[in-house]
Image (cartoon, rainbow, N blue to C red):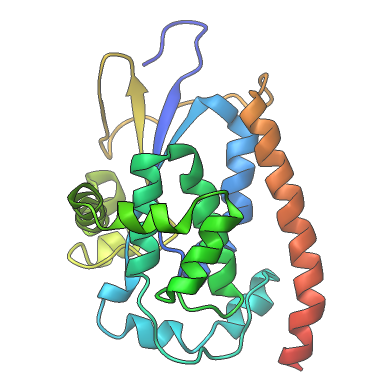
Length: 247
């Protein structure tokens, strides 16, 4: 527990996949948490690679018209041209994390947006365009993706996504509790109290860590507020465009 007068910090491990419409639909909530609690939350992103699960690529290729209507998100509900693997895009995100960490989240965002607009995440041109969007050289990103370090990092993410914590298993409504041997359906998180000088630990019996909303926010929080505003604006524009396809 943090000392007196010092706000407790939580480390949140965010398991996600750029192909997942459920994770995309949860983005406004995630960004609001980042803005609202600022530096009290420490985030780590891990890739699931949903399409490793049998039949998942085929389900994703059907589009998500129900989610688009329910959450008013900019998701193209039209079925995709073919089933696609999310592994190349997830690999690119891990490569960005290990080589240029500040580009990891922006690259995930651009890949996610392009996928929800109907793009295929195993299309090299889509990945290259997303890299250019965030100022990454596509050739350099390709070179990173081919390294053993990135391969090991991606395999570690895949394993972690399929090994839910005891706290996640204690949540009866979670997919982790229903099937610990399969992938955790995003959006999924593991949280633990962060302590200085030693690894974080999580237990289903731990008392909730108290966070303090409204504290002074860092410059990064202003960036998250801008992302929320941009997300809301994109939703408004896309809702008009996509509703035409739903009628």
